[in-house]
Length: 81
Image 1 (tube, rainbow, N blue to C red):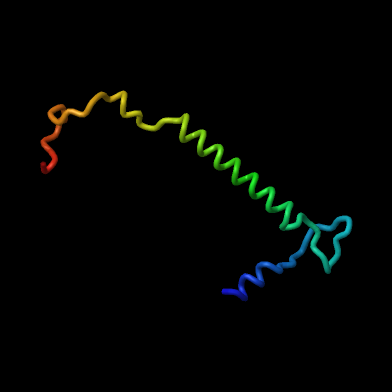
Image 2 (image 1 turned 180 degrees about the horizontal axis):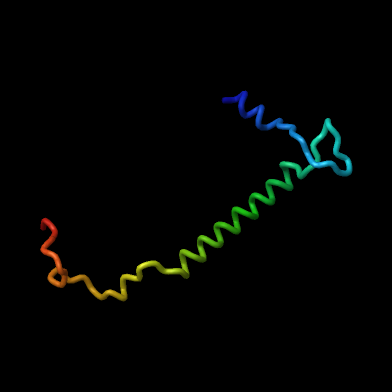
């Protein structure tokens, strides 16, 4: 497993031509702090959206159906107790 991580970590693949790019280097954002800050920002945005949906959006609001009455069901199924 460790050798696979080392291979993935040191990937050097083709890149589009541009300023400062050669066959022997890879130009892009650094892992720390640029990529880490972008990843942390995306994580915070996803958590904020999920928290907002959890607090504001409602699925199956049970208070609209009224209290539970065992005799009000249309089937003969009943709990064991």
